[in-house]
Every structure is written in C-alpha cells, then in structure tokens.
Image 1 (cartoon, chains in turn red, green):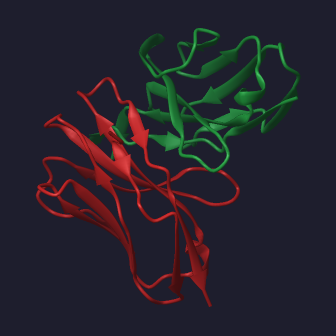
Image 2 (image 1 turned 135 degrees about the vertical axis):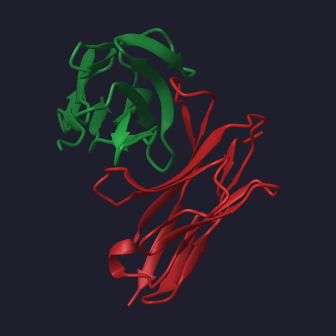
Amino acid sequence: AQKITQTQPGMFVQEKEAVTLDCTYDTSDQSYGLFWYKQPSSGEMIFLIYQGSYDEQNATEGRYSLNFQKARKSANLVISASQLGDSAMYFCAMREGQRGYQKVTFGTGTKLQVIP
Amino acid sequence: ETGVTQSPTHLIKTRGQQVTLRCSSQSGHNTVSWYQQALGQGPQFIFQYYREEENGRGNFPPRFSGLQFPNYSSELNVNALELDDSALYLCASSGGLAGGTWTDTQYFGPGTRLTVL
C-alpha cells in the first residue's frame, strides 16, 4: 500500500482564490509527522508546513494551513488567496519512527497552476 | 543562518563511471538525508547520516554509498553508473533547534542534476 497518496496529478486555481490539495497517508506508528513541500521548476524543495501526529490544532503558516483529520488519515493543504508564484509542484510527505531516524516518504505530487 | 548547499549543480557522466556529490548542511543541523528524484516523480529516500554514521537506508543497491564528516557535511557516491541513475539528487539537513525548539523538519538544498549517457 502507498504510504502517501496524492490523488490530484494537476490542479488549476484562479488567482486570489483558495485551493485544497489532497493527501492521505498510511502508517501504524503512533508518532509521525506530516509535511508539505513546494517544488518550483527550479527544482529546490521548499518546506511549507508541518503537522505532528500529537498536535491537536491544525498547523498554519501564513497563507498555508494543514487540515489534519487523524481518524481519516488525511492531511490536506489549503492555500488561501492564491498567487501566481504559487504555481509549482506540491509534495505531501510523512516522517515515521522515533526521533533520530527521520526517513521521510513522499507522495507523487500535485502540479498546481494559478491562472491570472 | 546558512542554508543547505549542494555541489555541483549539474553533472554529466557516462555509464560505468563513478560520481561524488557534496552537501553542506544548514548550520546547527546534525543529520543529513539523501534523496533521488527521477523526472516526474517524488523524491525517493536513499539513506540518512547522523553524527557520521549511516542511520537508515532505502531500497538502493550498495553502489550508492555515503559519508558524513565531523562538520556534518556529507557526500553521496555512486559507482558503476547506470542510465537509470539520471535524476535530481537532493540533500536535506535536519536535527537542530528552531526558535528554541528541537525540529525534525528537513530542509533541502537546491539539488544536483545528474545525467548519465
């Protein structure tokens, strides 16, 4: 089974609108972390937001928020007020295991295109 | 605070050759992870180094090897290059303090794009 599933290969959003990128995960660990990264065409992986499995509040970082639904094993990224610079690949990722071993598994990504 | 750096940016090799990629971790970080990202795919975990020891490995053959140095910088070595090794190789550092709190978040370098002909 895939550990991280991103079902949307591509998404379009109008500038200034909000968009939700889906991510579901599979793990039997009690302690894990969920991340979202942005990868522009230049290739660099840019950290956006982190949610720990024990965090009760949904994480927020500026225009990014993570809709964490633990029972459904989903960790969707919400981008509010989309900007043209948000056009990029977005990867959901999960860290499993205890501190000190930080293997991170990535999904296949969603390509977001912001339309003017 | 210095971010993660990688060298070289681009590299072209021929099948059967050997290559060494380098990574300098973000200051204060003691863990380095390496990933291979083929075109159109998500990054795949190669291995991780923590305090100069290999601390975990993905499904990559032994011809992929690495080192971590006392200053926490790292090298990825690939022997007997194959055409399928053509990819973007990403280094990520983690394991440090951010705002007074320990963070496991991995911060990535710009990558090295390897082409094997």
